[in-house]
Length: 339
Image 1 (cartoon, rainbow, N blue to C red):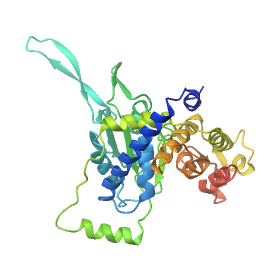
Image 2 (spheres, rainbow, N blue to C red):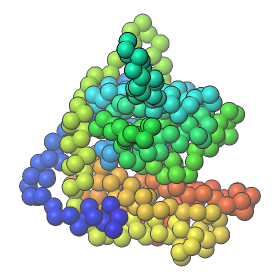
Image 3 (cartoon, rainbow, N blue to C red):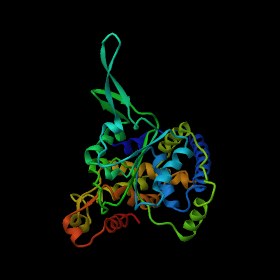
Image 4 (cartoon, rainbow, N blue to C red):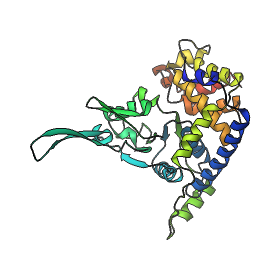
């Protein structure tokens, strides 16, 4: 049984209590949005999808060219959500121990020796992996266990990470020099891949005026780590209709070349999304409903979030790339099945 199906079958709490919790959560999110909007101008879809990821308890990959405010967004979220945040600048010479920590040999005055573990920057609540694709695949893979199991193993000993724990990674497009593609296993651990585009004219004008003055605008805390954990629990308790469950399964299963009813998928995809994609869609649709002030997700939420959930869990084959086929076109065919 997958995590998503277990959530659907779990008995729901009293409906009145759940409604009250969702209403309180909606108010908190409105405060969070307002606090972020004082520092980040425009990019509302990017902000909302990032909040959806955090409310779902997942990790997010922000993809865009340099200078679009990806790093600023992550720093702002750490302050607004009251999370203990740390930043790691990924570079080609970065080693796994620079992220996880390492053991050092201590010697007492009596000459007794023992190993002591020094924790790395991953021991935080919000880890900013800046330009993650500039590090080698070996170093990138150091995050695999932490992102999935919320713990790390060093020297045969497991160390639990703080809760909540989220990785917010930024990435430059793979076509730029000095970058390495992320391993497929690590890509699958990101709940959403969010594309960050250039801001609209009015947003860029407001940003220009606000960021070149004498006084810098500082973000204000609007939520605590404990409230975020409570919000994640509330999200998981929200009911999901059978039509939404069927829509999620239809989109995900139709994206697999081996079983898809769509000829374009069979012809153009090397591999498709696994069960973790369905779990991500299930959680993300609930969080999006809360952001919109609704008490249950709809099929429209599945359609809206499918690109961000699926684009990093699918790969075009050589023939598709040669023909100029885009993943966005394939995903549009998948969502057309449930529209």
